[in-house]
Each structure stands twice: as structure tokens, then as C-alpha cells.
Image (tube, rainbow, N blue to C red; front, side, top):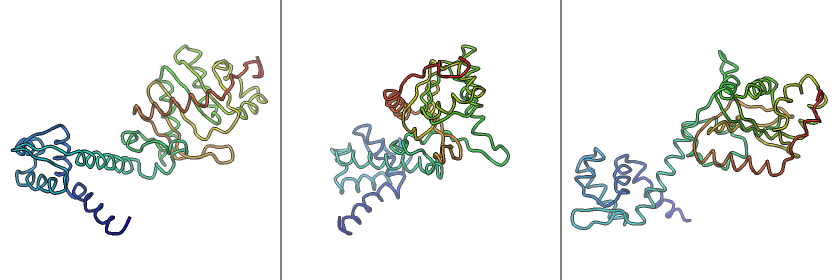
Length: 269
């Protein structure tokens, strides 16, 4: 692409980037043919602004007119659809900010647009365990739990075990086989695992993220694994359908390569 091509592309993008009215008018036209007066009423733009946007759209081949009615051409539909997608991506970046740099690598394949409404909980100086407490809160509020993790902090295990024992939580989890190998050497630490040992799957390799599917929500721990420890600033949760479908698929992929834990392996059985 030459510099002139780049300049022309940027000039086309500016039609929307420099004018919220242009975006609103094109979005209104996405609903089908209509009149300039209807566009002014629906978008709140002045009649002169609507006329200017329509004229520029026609000059670029993005809008067609027949009498007093206007409609988007195929190119016009593509332009507003692609700009809207880019706008939503930027909104997601602005919403999450620095947090995006801490998404676990498998989550990099997610469309950032689907994370715009995600809730992020990070520790603060006054509340250093905010993210841990939020995770526990989600466990206790849920009816079903599936986990895909490298390891499991004792406080989480004890809470989950208690919920399972009380019949308050349907539980299943996939965890690294190496972690289980270490667990069987520690009877005290392994004790709460008996509550759900028959619902554990062991994965023979590395699990590069810590993820929970709780009811219809996905919870991702932000950060990375360093020397077998999870290092990160907090957690992200979302009920976005596309993210949930991604998480379900990822979980199923790991489950297919995992084996059920033999409860007899745990000490004290």
C-alpha cells in the first residue's frame, strides 16, 4: 500500500472518526431506506448536518437516493459495520486499559469487543485481598462450577469442598497432573479434596491459565505463571455469550486430553 492509499483510507475513516453525527446517521440508515427528515428526528442532528452527511456519503458511493429516500449501498454497509467494530474494540481497550496486558495468553484470541462489559477486581492498598474475596463470593453464589487451573490455593479448595458437601454446588475441575502428584504427598492438604475427588480430571501437561466457569459467567485470573506460581493483579469476570462459548470450548478441549483422578490416590482414603 502506497502512502497515497494510506492517506485515502484515513480520509475515509475520518468521515466517522471526526463526526459522531455521521456515525449515528449511518447507523440509522442501517435499519433501511428512510428520509432526511426522519434521520434528523432519529439522530438529533440538524437538517443541515444530515444533508451534509448524506451528500458526502453519496459522493463516496456509500449512499444511494431515490427521490426523497436514502439508503446505504453495500460499500456503505461495510464501512459503518467495520467502523462500529473498530469503535467497540477501542471502547474495550479504554474500559480495561492496562488490565489487557495481563490477560493469560489463551485469552488473547478473544475479540476485545466482547470484554467491554467485563468486571475487573484488583487488590488495593486498603483491600489487598479484594480479588480473592470476590472469587470466594462467586463460588458461594454459584450453582455449578468448572475449573481449569494449574494448581489450587487451599482457601479456595476448602470453600469449594464445603459447598459440595452441603449440596450447594455442582463441581468439576481439570488440574495439572503434576500438582496432584505433589498433593498426594501431603495428607493434611489433600484432606478437603476427598469431597470432590471423583469430579477431578488431571491434565498431563501445562495449563497456562486459571479459569472458572460459574453458572453462566467466566472468571479469568489476570497474570501469568512464574516458577509454578500464579502472578497477577486480579481477576476478570463476564457473562458475555461469546466469551462463555470460548471458555466452554477451551474447557472441553482440555477435558478430552485429561484423565479422571483415581480417588484412591489421595492419602487417607
